[in-house]
Picture 1 (spheres, helix red, strand yellow):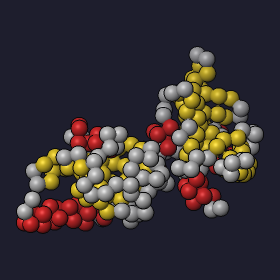
Picture 2 (spheres, one colour; picture 1 turned 90 degrees about the vertical axis):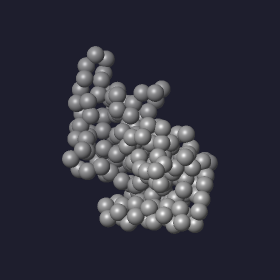
Picture 3 (tube, helix red, strand yellow; picture 1 turned 45 degrees about the vertical axis):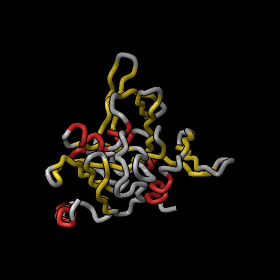
Picture 4 (cartoon, helix red, strand yellow; picture 1 turned 60 degrees about the vertical axis):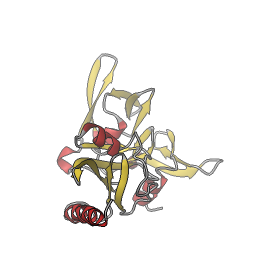
Length: 223
């Protein structure tokens, strides 16, 4: 690549960054990929495990955008960063080549308030029962199904934890790839014999906190 083309490419990438800075949070991160390689990144608070020139992981947002040529958004699990993250990928052109621009939002990012769930409809036997969000103590992913719990009762829902994570109120927090808890139902947080954190709910249920999510739990509860 000639020096002129390199300068053109740098100018294009910087233009994207300047435009995005007007509407994304300051602690968001930006990555751009072309030909299945990352060619640019600007980090917010995240700790990147990628470098310019590194291959695009096949289970990443960038890869999905490059393959489909469409906008993709999802909550991702430890693909590029040390903690789960919400990302939006956009198809772009860089010097005439198809690329992917990925905006990585802060871990505690939530969608706009009008999209927040006010209730979940759960299934018990052959009945569907709407349950107010504030009555749900925790949500679990088990055997490729999602279950939520209210007043000791278990309900099944078709909504995945990834979908729920961005559409639940701020008092719901992901603590494990299998669990989301309502922090209003926490009785105490302690350590087990291996010094891992355990959350005990008011009804006595104990749930583990994985290392990927402990920083988010500490940030929210300030301990």
